[in-house]
Image (cartoon, rainbow, N blue to C red; front, side):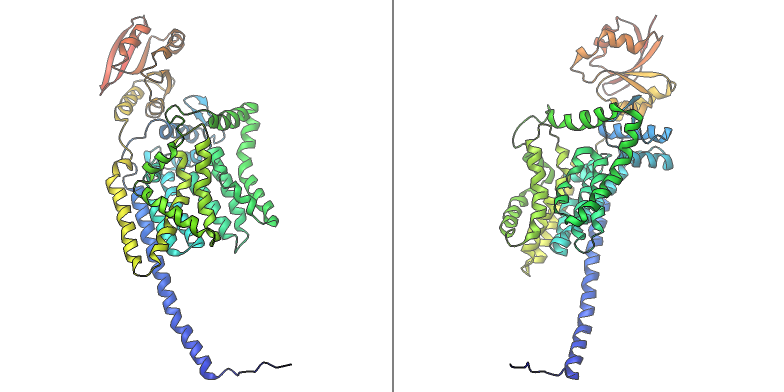
Length: 490
């Protein structure tokens, strides 16, 4: 048996080791400072593009004004359980975003900023989480590049600047993914995976279950933790709402609002197989050109690097499911943009890893980002599209009491309800569908009143007066082709 030769550690060797460690510490410290500075610049740019003139325009029609009406009712009544829209109980929207906006209204008053700020904050938070996920999976550089891609993805930018649910949904989906990865070092993060998934569900219903496949990969001894955290966040509102409204809540919220939407085709998007590819092209703009190359590199490297499976599935899995589904909307793609950004970020970091190309790649990415923002700024900033409608609705509010109703003969019900701050009785939802104005509806809407204010337009005015069998009326105000009139009944 041979004994290994013992070599004593000389004082000189110990001194060299200490000197080497002392030399490396400043280098590591400088590297960390550099990385923090780069991250700070990314987050500053993200804050700038999402918050610049955030409340400069009026609320847009449909979802944004719709959310504002419900949140305003919550703030006034203090009832955060039952959403009410235009005088009706309305379980057609998950409640979390409404709670946040209603809380803002309660503290700071009813403002456009209050409707949009949480969407913008969630969008910025999504950029930060994308960076953190990229750093955990790949490198600081890949995370930084991915964050830059997401910040300047035009569709993500636009939705983040409106009072909609998509970027908040994306934030909680990203948080669930980040927590799943962070749990490798600290198992308590599995609780956050479960809680984040529940918060995503409370933000936008069934789409919030996107992180659920991660539960299959949680180690068996921690799965219960994740589900308990999910249920603790998920159950309270659903139980209280069910106890208060019974079977009607379950039928409307789960069956009509969630499940039926997946089976009802969107007449605007149609059933074209590659419709979402077109949506991606418009949503990503110049980044779309990099996506095929990123997919090729990622699929090639995925056999060697296990970390690549997560962004691949994040981007491709939901995309395939959405393509198969009958109900289609372009904003359904928002939650997969962080996955796409990670793929492009990894691809760019791999090219930049070849030394001298790093500065060139970085400059190229910054150039694409700047081009996306500057050239497509018209697609980023919320346009002023309802100035005439809002103005007439505000005049109608000034000429009515809180218990009066206003008739609407046009297709901007949410904007009318928000800016008039009265119950609105819609006579039709489209100028083209004149048959929606029925005698029965007109009789119910007027109900023996001596006068009624009507928000209408020059195109359908004659047809409306004819439907009312020729009452006298007065034009109170006119904006563009929109009219506010007062009908007088004998």
